[in-house]
Length: 163
Image 1 (cartoon, rainbow, N blue to C red):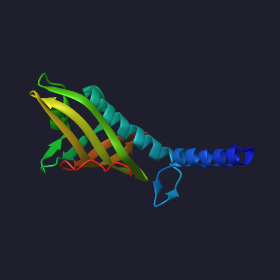
Image 2 (image 1 turned 180 degrees about the horizontal axis):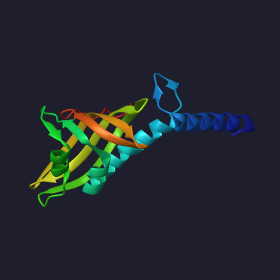
Image 3 (image 1 turned 180 degrees about the vertical axis):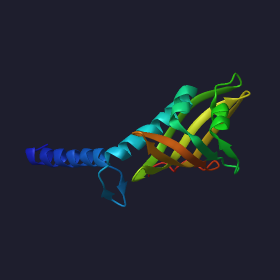
């Protein structure tokens, strides 16, 4: 490859990496992610990691006292009921839990995160795959982002493979 071709390739690579590091592309527009957005996205990753590990103390710290979730069937659960639901149990094995297609918007001391949660569990010997959309609302209190509300969809089809 000639020097010019290498230079063009290096510029394209640098621009792509800089765009990925600076924010999310929406309609081809790349925007810079603020410190608060980064912190909210970190809190959202902490939520997913705590679920994957069955880490009840981490969830206790992340959920605000008034936390509420609307489940796929419309059921409302408060902090205690959701944590009890996520607590490790002998008849449930979590194989993985991850989030994808995650984006955050911050409005002063409130943030809205939307994404897709993908996980697999074995419940009473039966394997269950989940692929669901979620929306989470966080509030900033004493410098920490706390989860106050969530809504999760029913199972959705997995995204189509790239063409």
